[in-house]
Amino acid sequence: MKIVVIGGTGLIGSKLVTKLTEHGHEAVAASPNTGVDTLTGEGLAEVLTGAQVVVDVSNSPSFERAAVLKFFETSTGNLLAAEAKAGVGHHVAVSIVGTERMPDNGYFAAKIAQEQLIEKSGIPFSLVHSTQFFEFARGIADEGTVDGEVHMAPVLFQPIAGDDVAKAVGRTAVGAPLNGRVEIAGPEQFRMDEFFRQALAAWGDPREVVTDPHARYFGSELSERSLVPIDDATLGTIRYLDWLGSATAGK
Image (cartoon, rainbow, N blue to C red; front, top):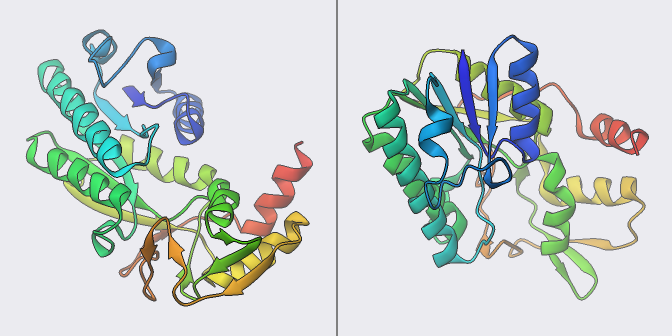
């Protein structure tokens, strides 16, 4: 099966291409680095020739509200139009658990707009809603740092390893279109402040984690279940401290 992975040279995309190839599929990494640009449409028709499935794991280079919305609307619109011409039978996109619960968040609003384009396209689709990746934990801590202290809300938090995300997306890509969504999350659920207290200790990071019910997450105040699945989710198998140990050992 030919599966084109948009954003295929990035964090999740590169893992996905490897896993699909190992399972005997023709997985093609498509990104500006490989001559495919969804913003301009360059290379789309060529790379989609003969493709049965397209997986979109691309991301906006800017998180500024107007810029991220323009990215996802333009990129997804061009991609869906090219898929329709190429006869692609399954569009898979990775989104975020809780997008609809934080409409004031510019990035989440842009992901909702992307999903609406996919749902209205007429192309069979599957949406994979993921919790936050382990790989982004340090960035989340940095974003929450105020005057040298890491402010985190004591809300539920259930991050997932990038390898588990790639595995779940791969299974979805080779299966029948859901014409709906599946949610994925890590195997452990924490309080966000406690997770980062443990994580910073494991990193050897001296910053103090402050429990702050009003701490903002990339501009949004969180409620108890803003970032975790509400219904049943497919859970990964990799635990954070195990992942961190493996990542550290690999350096």
